Image (tube, rainbow, N blue to C red; front, side, top):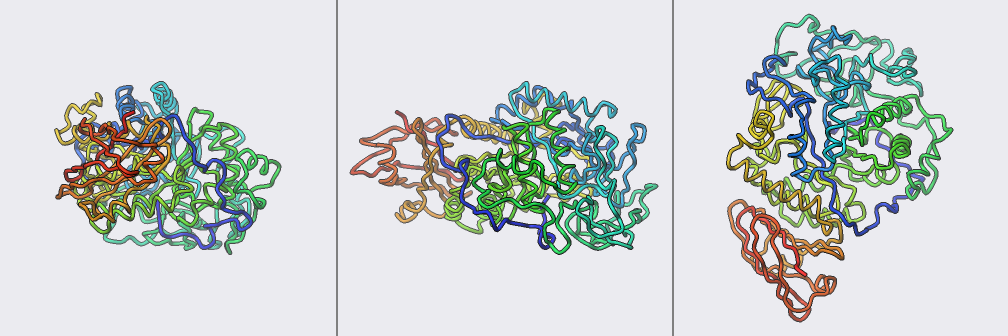
Length: 621
């Protein structure tokens, strides 16, 4: 989930702490490749139903289950080099379906987006979405079995935690003994108290927002709770920070804002970290918080994280992390790392000015590289800018690049093959090569990306260009790959199979080859200055360590081939200790061998690139 609307004062830095890189940000030589994260939208992934009726029910359109993600599915992910599977939409969120037979209260369509509901409006953090279980009574056990299957295939499990907000009707029926619901002890007579879990619009009841563009819940279908009303008195602040008793339709009206001890004027009501904390280890952060009095919401989310760690979950993707104060992240993440030092902690942060604070002060492992790398690659693919933008982004991230997760698709973004993005999945090829290989960062794939899913369906609440996260639906290109549970591309088109093979080759390189976790040198500037066929639709760089040396060059043009001599700078000739000619072996696509000519301290290799082609060349010893 992302937004441009934030509460004033809630994006915070600690003025007393410096931003000097901590030890874990120093360059190093690893003997392995990089993490590969695969995002599965769990409700859609295993669904074989192809009806795709707008606003269709579960019975009409089908739904994927935990059990659908079988060994064949997981083995197919291993072929993509996947190390971590992010199962999206697992915690029990608000959903318009009657599960009262299992003790679950019905949700009100007036404060639920879509029929299947947003995964970011969590209703019960101590259980899982009943839609995802064959037997809703055993839903937690079915997810635990999926965790075990994933681990058996050698991969880690990541799920969402959404600390900024919860569903308007949050109520846990599964919480452990000793755990209280959010808001259970709130003083609702005041707008703010440190240990209140919510903020209140004192004296005013909540009113459902006025709909826009003729919107009607459930597409206008009659429902006993769909009456334009929702009882909440007093009203709570809305998830995106709106303080109105009647939020706007484009607010996150289905959610309520969590209070982390930030007063309404933006001041802090909790202990601050001491000076120099950016250089402190995660264990030193953990020790700092011991014995400190912290807001109640901090404790509740620590309990949630510890609950899922105990279930075998290996890490978390934190939704809209920058809307929560960075001191909380120091508290939570140090607690998580104390329990599991290898936990994988990924945060959705969109403000580049805050990146280093959330890494160094908040102790995140990884942040979304959306605003810098993703946005730049998308602009290049759309012909809005040249490839020099890549060099600029990489240079600006040099001190933290290994902590910036790269992606070209996720549930918030348009599908590459949609007309609104690139109109063709093939146009992702050069961008994927750059995204996956240019830095020591992990790479994330979104399910269906590797077979060119276009997200073209009108599903109900969800709009075309993005695969819906609100509705019951099937995902056509992925369903062809899934082949009724075989996960073997048995129904995929030739173009889809070819694209899948490209992704498998590329991501295997990223996951397994240690040189891509080593040093980096851009070759773009020197080659651009030569004016010899290399231009702003081409990008080249080198990566290496003591064991491997790689040259990577990509042609972003969808219509024109490129022929040129790729110049290798004297600095790189010296770093690689080159003398005399050498051979370069292609490791992506073709299996050709290229000659690297070395003369007088300079080197070059003759390159021919078809439209959208990339070469990934390994120096032969």
